[in-house]
Length: 208
Image 1 (cartoon, rainbow, N blue to C red):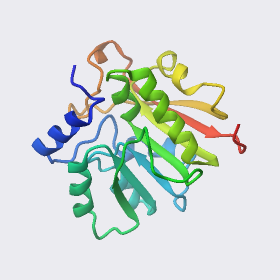
Image 2 (cartoon, rainbow, N blue to C red; image 1 turned 30 degrees about the vertical axis):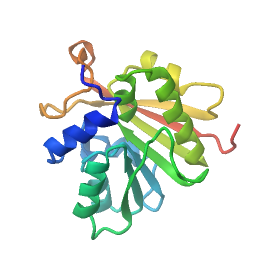
Image 3 (cartoon, helix red, strand yellow; image 1 turned 30 degrees about the horizontal axis):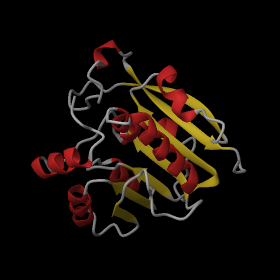
Image 4 (tube, rainbow, N blue to C red; image 1 turned 180 degrees about the vertical axis):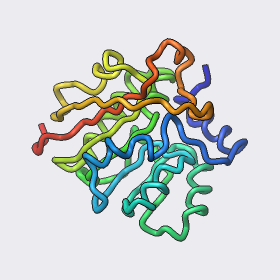
């Protein structure tokens, strides 16, 4: 299995292949769910953005204020150049497990495959816990974390549904695209249902 949890893997990948690639879903595939929880005026954090077109497609749909972070310096530099004219859509080189933002900075955080990628790597449980804890920290008291995943609820709830996270979790399902390029990170994806899961974790208004 590719070392999806390692920065070196992504640096090499984005150096080799600079073409846009979207894991799992495009904006059109998740829009009906996401728009129930995020408004166009809110400040959105995209975690592990890669060279996905998600922020661009949301921008074109009126979601103008976003910060996109990725562990790969190569891809961040490329995206900064690509979207230099969209000044409210920023790209920053940052590790999602150790973010440099102040507490309660964002109204929403979107994760399209990043939690899954971390869970494919070494020390996955500890790293996943760091990611989710950091997301919780940087979200406002009523903020929402939206994680798009191939992982079924029994395999994701142990990470998301913990006492230290004072949020309500709702799970939606969307059909997987038939386009082959929207591959899953899982090597055993053939055993998974023909859906992706959208985990919506909404903070309850007070921080525990």
